[in-house]
Length: 76
Image 1 (cartoon, rainbow, N blue to C red):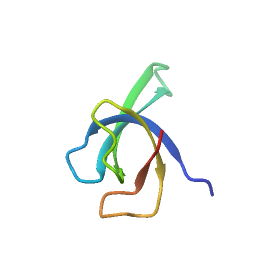
Image 2: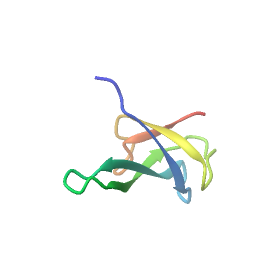
Image 3: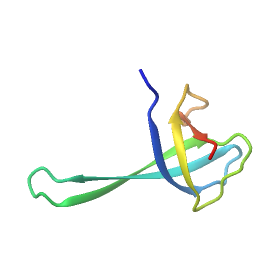
């Protein structure tokens, strides 16, 4: 099964080797037919602390690196 890849914006880089990435998805409401925006935050592994707040990054699924980290940043 292929690994999922998501694109989002870095919202925090306070922790060592970790960034918080906010990923937004848009979909049409099934009944109202209105476009809805939902966002979700993922914690991703950033080996060299290279990304800062506001950067657009791509993250990929990986084996668990810690209690909360299940994603890693793909170098861009």
